[in-house]
Image 1 (spheres, rainbow, N blue to C red):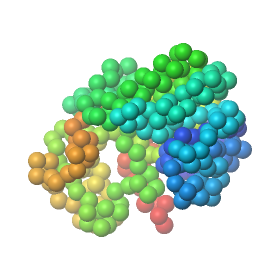
Image 2: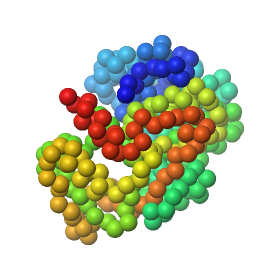
Image 3: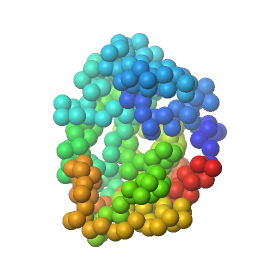
Length: 297
């Protein structure tokens, strides 16, 4: 399916995208054909050249004065991740963004479903209390709270998007399966929710078209699944052997990789459908992987 603008996409404006990466890039590709001006921040000159080639205006940050971009933006998207010292955008630009207040038409913050913590495979929705069990999850929870506090103080039209595991072009299991490095790590009862990047883009576009300040949305597909099933299906689509199963106790994993397996939950996505009218392009990993493979040819 195409990511180009459609009749449901929002009227054009100027989007300032902090930390303009994979998800923000998909949104930009959707908006630019509709006449949008996209200003994206990045850390490197090489990446800035890539953004320019994609039709966006690039600013190196940290390092550039973003005051003019903030004052000209009608919409702001925060993709930059927090660290132990908090949210970097708030550290550098809270006063300038806060001064815009209700002058902004929309502000989106990309968070993670990791803020819910471990539910042993149980279901969570946007009303579930936040109880992150990882350091990165706690940073995200704190960043959400900091943005909510600023929004309440100055009237920012804040929208929070909690993203499940992201996949899409260039970010799928096929390369590792082809290289023979894919692993099917088995932890009984483990399930993850995931979301195709083009569905992230269409949800963000739908929210921009129908702003609801204060709203929180889960972004995931309809089919939480064990990770080893996704790897096996990818191998089957490629006609290659299914990688052998490795019990998690025997797996050599980085601390970050192991932290993902510390939490298991199924994430509900009813709100994006009911409140934003979104029909997922890829409602499960099977349709998403098939589309990725088709896109390679």
